[in-house]
Amino acid sequence: MAFDLRFIPERRHESRNNLKTKRTLASLRRFLPSLVVFAVATGLGVRLFLLISKYSVNLPFWDQRDLHRALFEKAPLWRLFLWQHGPHRQGIGFVLDKFLFELTDWSTRAEAFFIGGVIFIAMLLALLLKRKLFGGSLGTSDALIPMIFLTPAQWETFIVAPNPSLAAFPLLLIMLYCLAWLQANPLKKYGTVLLLNLFLIYTGFGLFIGLITVAHLALECFKGSRREARLSAAPALALILGVGSFFSFFLDYTWNPAVDCFSFPHP
Figure 1 (cartoon, rainbow, N blue to C red):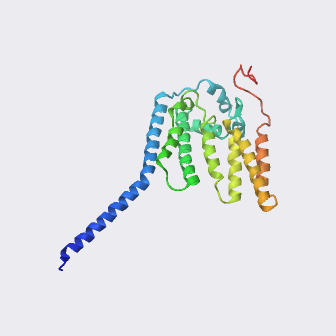
Figure 2 (cartoon, rainbow, N blue to C red):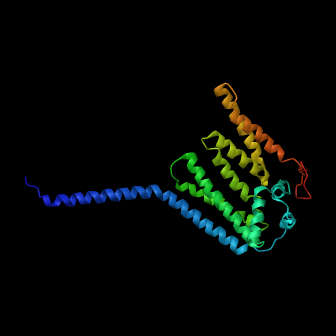
Figure 3 (cartoon, rainbow, N blue to C red):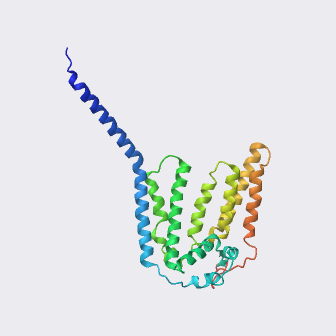
Protein backbone atom coordinates (compact mmCIF):
# COMPACT_ATOMS: atom_id res chain seq x y z
CA MET A 1 0.00 0.00 0.00
CA ALA A 2 1.39 3.40 -1.02
CA PHE A 3 0.83 6.70 0.77
CA ASP A 4 0.84 10.09 -0.89
CA LEU A 5 2.95 12.16 1.53
CA ARG A 6 1.97 15.41 -0.22
CA PHE A 7 -1.34 15.54 1.67
CA ILE A 8 0.10 15.20 5.22
CA PRO A 9 1.13 18.92 5.63
CA GLU A 10 -2.29 19.98 4.33
CA ARG A 11 -4.07 17.77 6.88
CA ARG A 12 -1.90 19.14 9.67
CA HIS A 13 -2.73 22.66 8.53
CA GLU A 14 -6.46 21.86 8.52
CA SER A 15 -6.29 20.36 12.02
CA ARG A 16 -4.51 23.47 13.31
CA ASN A 17 -7.17 25.70 11.76
CA ASN A 18 -9.92 23.60 13.33
CA LEU A 19 -8.21 23.83 16.72
CA LYS A 20 -7.93 27.61 16.42
CA THR A 21 -11.58 27.86 15.41
CA LYS A 22 -12.67 25.78 18.40
CA ARG A 23 -10.60 27.91 20.75
CA THR A 24 -12.06 31.09 19.27
CA LEU A 25 -15.60 29.79 19.64
CA ALA A 26 -14.91 28.68 23.21
CA SER A 27 -13.52 32.12 24.08
CA LEU A 28 -16.51 33.78 22.43
CA ARG A 29 -18.93 31.60 24.39
CA ARG A 30 -17.06 32.44 27.59
CA PHE A 31 -17.04 36.20 27.05
CA LEU A 32 -20.38 36.62 25.24
CA PRO A 33 -22.49 36.89 28.45
CA SER A 34 -20.16 39.60 29.79
CA LEU A 35 -20.40 41.43 26.46
CA VAL A 36 -24.20 41.25 26.63
CA VAL A 37 -24.18 42.71 30.16
CA PHE A 38 -21.73 45.41 29.06
CA ALA A 39 -23.90 46.30 26.06
CA VAL A 40 -27.08 46.47 28.17
CA ALA A 41 -25.37 48.59 30.84
CA THR A 42 -23.93 50.95 28.24
CA GLY A 43 -27.24 51.33 26.39
CA LEU A 44 -29.25 51.91 29.55
CA GLY A 45 -26.61 54.31 30.88
CA VAL A 46 -26.74 56.38 27.70
CA ARG A 47 -30.55 56.44 27.85
CA LEU A 48 -30.48 57.55 31.49
CA PHE A 49 -28.06 60.42 30.86
CA LEU A 50 -30.03 61.52 27.79
CA LEU A 51 -33.15 61.60 29.98
CA ILE A 52 -31.31 63.76 32.52
CA SER A 53 -30.00 66.04 29.77
CA LYS A 54 -33.46 66.51 28.28
CA TYR A 55 -35.53 67.12 31.42
CA SER A 56 -33.26 68.50 34.17
CA VAL A 57 -33.30 72.26 34.72
CA ASN A 58 -30.73 74.66 36.12
CA LEU A 59 -33.06 76.12 38.72
CA PRO A 60 -33.16 75.32 42.48
CA PHE A 61 -36.75 74.76 43.56
CA TRP A 62 -39.04 73.01 46.04
CA ASP A 63 -37.08 71.21 48.79
CA GLN A 64 -33.80 72.58 47.47
CA ARG A 65 -34.67 76.10 48.64
CA ASP A 66 -34.67 74.92 52.25
CA LEU A 67 -31.98 72.28 51.85
CA HIS A 68 -29.42 74.63 50.33
CA ARG A 69 -29.87 77.16 53.11
CA ALA A 70 -26.94 75.51 54.89
CA LEU A 71 -24.74 76.11 51.84
CA PHE A 72 -25.73 79.78 51.64
CA GLU A 73 -24.95 80.14 55.34
CA LYS A 74 -21.48 78.70 54.60
CA ALA A 75 -21.86 76.09 57.34
CA PRO A 76 -18.71 74.09 58.14
CA LEU A 77 -18.34 70.59 56.72
CA TRP A 78 -19.27 68.85 59.94
CA ARG A 79 -22.54 70.79 60.08
CA LEU A 80 -23.28 69.86 56.48
CA PHE A 81 -22.65 66.21 57.36
CA LEU A 82 -25.09 66.44 60.28
CA TRP A 83 -27.60 68.68 58.47
CA GLN A 84 -31.15 67.42 58.86
CA HIS A 85 -33.79 67.77 56.17
CA GLY A 86 -36.91 65.79 56.93
CA PRO A 87 -36.51 62.69 59.10
CA HIS A 88 -32.96 61.93 57.96
CA ARG A 89 -29.60 63.68 57.89
CA GLN A 90 -27.68 64.61 54.74
CA GLY A 91 -24.29 63.03 55.43
CA ILE A 92 -21.50 62.57 52.90
CA GLY A 93 -23.67 63.36 49.87
CA PHE A 94 -24.36 66.90 51.07
CA VAL A 95 -20.68 67.51 51.80
CA LEU A 96 -19.74 66.56 48.23
CA ASP A 97 -22.68 68.59 46.94
CA LYS A 98 -21.03 71.71 48.39
CA PHE A 99 -17.86 71.17 46.36
CA LEU A 100 -19.87 70.32 43.25
CA PHE A 101 -21.82 73.60 43.44
CA GLU A 102 -18.63 75.58 43.99
CA LEU A 103 -17.06 74.00 40.89
CA THR A 104 -20.13 74.40 38.64
CA ASP A 105 -21.39 77.84 39.70
CA TRP A 106 -24.45 76.36 41.40
CA SER A 107 -25.64 74.29 38.46
CA THR A 108 -28.49 71.97 39.47
CA ARG A 109 -28.14 70.27 36.07
CA ALA A 110 -24.61 69.30 37.05
CA GLU A 111 -26.04 67.94 40.30
CA ALA A 112 -28.52 65.80 38.34
CA PHE A 113 -25.72 64.39 36.19
CA PHE A 114 -23.67 63.82 39.34
CA ILE A 115 -26.48 61.75 40.84
CA GLY A 116 -26.75 59.75 37.60
CA GLY A 117 -23.01 59.07 37.72
CA VAL A 118 -23.20 57.89 41.33
CA ILE A 119 -25.99 55.44 40.48
CA PHE A 120 -24.06 54.18 37.44
CA ILE A 121 -20.99 53.50 39.62
CA ALA A 122 -23.23 51.73 42.14
CA MET A 123 -24.45 49.49 39.30
CA LEU A 124 -20.85 48.59 38.38
CA LEU A 125 -20.13 47.76 42.03
CA ALA A 126 -23.24 45.54 42.10
CA LEU A 127 -21.86 43.57 39.13
CA LEU A 128 -18.52 43.25 40.94
CA LEU A 129 -20.33 42.08 44.07
CA LYS A 130 -22.16 39.42 42.09
CA ARG A 131 -18.87 38.10 40.69
CA LYS A 132 -17.24 38.01 44.13
CA LEU A 133 -20.19 36.24 45.71
CA PHE A 134 -20.72 33.57 43.06
CA GLY A 135 -17.32 33.44 41.33
CA GLY A 136 -16.58 33.14 37.64
CA SER A 137 -17.63 35.54 34.95
CA LEU A 138 -20.95 37.30 34.48
CA GLY A 139 -23.94 35.48 33.03
CA THR A 140 -26.51 36.73 30.57
CA SER A 141 -29.10 36.95 33.35
CA ASP A 142 -26.86 39.49 35.12
CA ALA A 143 -28.11 42.04 32.58
CA LEU A 144 -31.01 42.37 35.04
CA ILE A 145 -28.68 44.27 37.39
CA PRO A 146 -28.22 47.32 35.11
CA MET A 147 -31.91 47.10 34.23
CA ILE A 148 -32.77 47.53 37.92
CA PHE A 149 -30.20 50.21 38.70
CA LEU A 150 -30.65 52.32 35.56
CA THR A 151 -34.42 52.22 35.25
CA PRO A 152 -36.08 55.50 34.14
CA ALA A 153 -38.79 54.82 36.74
CA GLN A 154 -36.55 56.66 39.23
CA TRP A 155 -36.79 59.88 37.20
CA GLU A 156 -37.77 61.94 40.26
CA THR A 157 -34.31 61.31 41.71
CA PHE A 158 -32.79 63.43 38.94
CA ILE A 159 -35.59 65.69 37.70
CA VAL A 160 -37.86 66.86 40.53
CA ALA A 161 -35.60 68.10 43.37
CA PRO A 162 -32.19 66.44 43.02
CA ASN A 163 -30.58 65.46 46.31
CA PRO A 164 -27.67 62.99 46.18
CA SER A 165 -28.01 62.22 49.89
CA LEU A 166 -31.57 60.97 49.59
CA ALA A 167 -31.12 57.87 47.42
CA ALA A 168 -28.04 57.87 45.21
CA PHE A 169 -25.32 57.93 47.86
CA PRO A 170 -27.03 55.41 50.16
CA LEU A 171 -27.22 53.09 47.15
CA LEU A 172 -23.52 53.55 46.39
CA LEU A 173 -22.52 53.16 50.04
CA ILE A 174 -24.57 49.98 50.41
CA MET A 175 -22.72 48.38 47.50
CA LEU A 176 -19.37 49.37 49.06
CA TYR A 177 -20.63 48.14 52.44
CA CYS A 178 -21.47 44.69 51.04
CA LEU A 179 -18.07 44.45 49.34
CA ALA A 180 -16.38 45.43 52.61
CA TRP A 181 -17.84 42.38 54.36
CA LEU A 182 -16.06 40.10 51.87
CA GLN A 183 -12.55 41.15 52.90
CA ALA A 184 -10.40 38.41 54.43
CA ASN A 185 -8.37 40.60 56.80
CA PRO A 186 -10.49 41.11 59.97
CA LEU A 187 -9.05 44.55 60.82
CA LYS A 188 -9.59 45.87 57.30
CA LYS A 189 -13.04 44.31 57.15
CA TYR A 190 -14.36 45.67 60.43
CA GLY A 191 -12.67 49.05 59.96
CA THR A 192 -14.13 49.55 56.47
CA VAL A 193 -17.54 48.24 57.50
CA LEU A 194 -17.74 50.58 60.51
CA LEU A 195 -16.69 53.61 58.44
CA LEU A 196 -19.24 52.89 55.70
CA ASN A 197 -21.83 52.09 58.34
CA LEU A 198 -21.27 55.54 59.89
CA PHE A 199 -21.62 57.23 56.49
CA LEU A 200 -24.82 55.29 55.80
CA ILE A 201 -26.40 56.11 59.15
CA TYR A 202 -25.95 59.83 58.49
CA THR A 203 -26.72 59.80 54.74
CA GLY A 204 -30.38 59.74 53.80
CA PHE A 205 -32.40 56.65 54.61
CA GLY A 206 -29.23 54.56 54.79
CA LEU A 207 -29.61 54.96 58.56
CA PHE A 208 -31.42 51.59 58.73
CA ILE A 209 -28.14 49.87 57.82
CA GLY A 210 -27.04 50.76 61.35
CA LEU A 211 -29.48 48.18 62.75
CA ILE A 212 -28.38 45.57 60.21
CA THR A 213 -24.72 46.16 61.13
CA VAL A 214 -25.42 45.70 64.85
CA ALA A 215 -27.42 42.51 64.19
CA HIS A 216 -24.72 41.07 61.92
CA LEU A 217 -21.88 41.87 64.33
CA ALA A 218 -23.86 40.37 67.22
CA LEU A 219 -24.30 37.20 65.16
CA GLU A 220 -20.56 37.08 64.42
CA CYS A 221 -19.78 37.47 68.14
CA PHE A 222 -22.20 34.64 68.95
CA LYS A 223 -20.76 32.30 66.31
CA GLY A 224 -17.19 33.13 67.32
CA SER A 225 -17.85 32.46 71.01
CA ARG A 226 -19.41 29.08 70.22
CA ARG A 227 -16.56 28.09 67.89
CA GLU A 228 -13.67 29.26 70.08
CA ALA A 229 -15.37 29.05 73.49
CA ARG A 230 -14.49 32.74 74.04
CA LEU A 231 -15.52 36.12 72.71
CA SER A 232 -13.24 37.43 69.94
CA ALA A 233 -11.95 40.94 70.56
CA ALA A 234 -12.32 42.28 66.98
CA PRO A 235 -16.05 41.62 66.42
CA ALA A 236 -16.85 42.54 70.04
CA LEU A 237 -15.15 45.93 69.70
CA ALA A 238 -16.78 46.42 66.30
CA LEU A 239 -20.17 45.65 67.87
CA ILE A 240 -19.65 48.28 70.57
CA LEU A 241 -18.63 50.88 67.97
CA GLY A 242 -21.56 49.89 65.74
CA VAL A 243 -24.06 50.40 68.56
CA GLY A 244 -22.42 53.72 69.45
CA SER A 245 -22.55 54.87 65.82
CA PHE A 246 -26.26 54.13 65.56
CA PHE A 247 -27.24 55.92 68.77
CA SER A 248 -25.01 58.89 67.93
CA PHE A 249 -27.46 59.67 65.13
CA PHE A 250 -30.04 60.79 67.70
CA LEU A 251 -27.81 63.37 69.41
CA ASP A 252 -29.41 66.79 68.83
CA TYR A 253 -31.94 65.08 66.57
CA THR A 254 -35.35 66.65 65.96
CA TRP A 255 -38.18 64.52 64.65
CA ASN A 256 -39.37 66.08 61.40
CA PRO A 257 -41.65 63.90 59.24
CA ALA A 258 -41.53 66.52 56.41
CA VAL A 259 -45.31 66.34 55.89
CA ASP A 260 -47.99 68.24 57.85
CA CYS A 261 -50.47 65.36 57.78
CA PHE A 262 -48.14 62.77 59.37
CA SER A 263 -49.61 60.68 62.18
CA PHE A 264 -48.58 57.36 63.69
CA PRO A 265 -50.33 55.03 63.78
CA HIS A 266 -52.33 56.11 60.75
CA PRO A 267 -56.04 56.31 61.69
